[in-house]
Length: 152
Image (cartoon, rainbow, N blue to C red; front, side, top):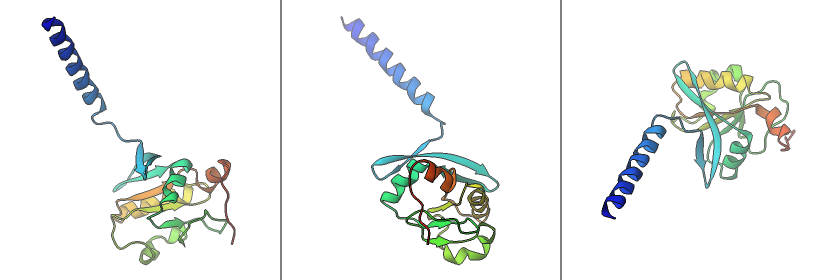
C-alpha cells in the first residue's frame, strides 16, 4: 500500500515538473486588465517590442482606463470613445510633449486599420518607450465587432 502511494506521489511530482518545464519560456498571450484577460500579442521591432491588443482586450482595458489613448490616424475618420489625443502618426516624434514623460508608462495607439499606429508604435519603441500598445485591426476591427465610433 505504501509503495502504491509512493508511486502515485512520484508520478504526480514528475507530471507537475513536466508541466512547469513545458510552460517555461512561453510568451504570455494575455494581460490582466482588471479582473478580465485582454488578448494580446507581442510584436518585435527594432529596439524592442510593443503589444498588439485585440478589440475585446481594449474594450476591457477601457472599462478601467488608466493610460493615454491616442488616435494617430490622418485624416480624421472618427474616434473610439475615451480617446485622449490626436497625434498624426508621422508626427509622433515631434509631439512627445503630449505623451507621458515616463517612458515606462503605458500608451495605447490606434488608427483606422492599424497600419499608421504600427508605424507610430515602432517609432516610440525606437525612442525608448517600453510599454506601447496598439489596437490590432484599428477602428475597422472595432466597428466590425459591433462597437461604435464617434465623430466630432
